[in-house]
Amino acid sequence: MAEIHTTASITPTKLELVAPWMARQRWYAAKGRQPVLRKLWSWRLDDPAGEVGIETLLVVDEGGAEPVVYQVPLTYRSAPLEGHQQALVGTMEHSVLGPRWVYDGPQDPVYAAQLLALVLEQAVPQAGSRSDTVEPAVVARRHPSWTTQTTLTGSRVLSGEQSNTSVIFDCTDDSGSPKPLICKVFRTLQAGDNPDVVVQGALAEAGSLRVPGMVGAVAATWPSVDGEGSDAGHLAFAQEFFPGTEDAWRVALRAIAAGEDFADRARELGAATAEVHSRLAEVMPTEPVTPAVVSTMVAGMRGRYVAAAAEVPALAEHEQRIAAVFDAAVGAPWPALQRIHGDYHLGQVLQVEGRGWVLLDFEGEPLRPLSERVRPDLAVRDIAGMLRSFDYAAGSWEQAHPGQSARGWVESAQRAFLDGYAAESGRDPREDTALLIAFQLDKALYEVVYEARNRPTWLTIPTTAVVRLLDDARKDLP
Image (cartoon, rainbow, N blue to C red; front, side, top):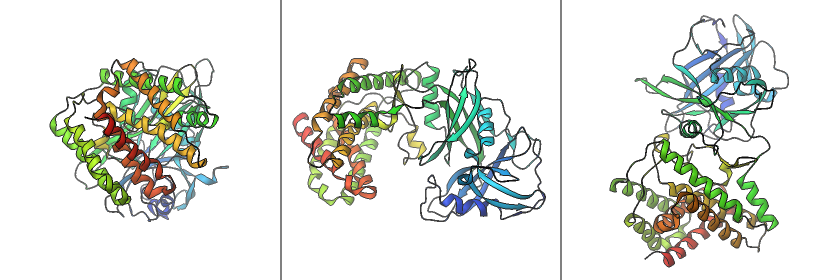
């Protein structure tokens, strides 16, 4: 086990080294601002070769309006790691060990190997401040459904992620066949069980093939930011990985460009969505809808209209019609609440050979607090999200092809998706017209705010959808 030199001095300090590096990372939430860091806690893993120090820091950034807790895994080496310059956090001088090169843990193969060993319950977490001491606050659990013999042959970090860091593990099974895995390391931590872990884990345990196989997860308990008590939540989880597959967004864009009908694939996607919803209602708790729940949800919709109108004042001319759609939702019958995907769109679904559509990323909308994302919700939210995603795929193609329309493609795909959902679930979502229109409108208003702030050239996609949905409401609602 690694020896911790508790009396040694380090220059610069770990926080002094980490802060400017963190400010440049895509997962750092406060873009353009220098972090103001305070250490909350740390824990370690052992390098079997005894050469590399492996430490995970939990730090709180106190430079913004609200404190944010980050997970920062680091490795400490006595020499540079060849070929990993992009992963270098910086260098420090250790009064006992001499010069140390500090790397972003997920990009270091030693950290990656020990993280996977921990997930598989083959490694033991160690205390961050005491040598040869097991850390009971870190708990790793191999998922009961994962019985595959797993041998690691290499690792790399998935590029392009925003809020987390995903490590791809090149592995083989007991027959020597490739069995790649992916491990998501959460960067921003919140107290509570991560819905991606809980929901996918429940589906995997129930034998669903509509989600990747679940390998295991790491959770921990750490000191709370205010120093009063502690918080607990997930740090990482690993699951099956499908290299070379395409998400439904890319599949749809290619179909639009080629003028191909997407109805069959959309119908299959609708059936897969209904299958997942049905299984979630079986294996996880459901709740009856109360007037208070309806009031809260619709109040959120009205609030998103206010935010959208502030960004695009022209929406104010539709205020009465928008209010009428939300009023109709209040008066409609609501089905029971259940666990859902929560951020469902074409980019969250893979087309896997031999499996069909496979759903990913059950975290819910990342900008919503975790306390909201773990609550049961209406399945119609997922349905509305996918209907809007079909519209977005066509809208993005139309952006690149001015004067051309893919409206017929959208309507065909949306109709087929709902047909597939109805056939699998036994209930057609179009029977709940008031809710279906209200949730689509709510999603479009959310999109208005996003596009106005981040991608103004795409703003016409959601604003046009708002008008179209209001026209649908005029025809379909009493």
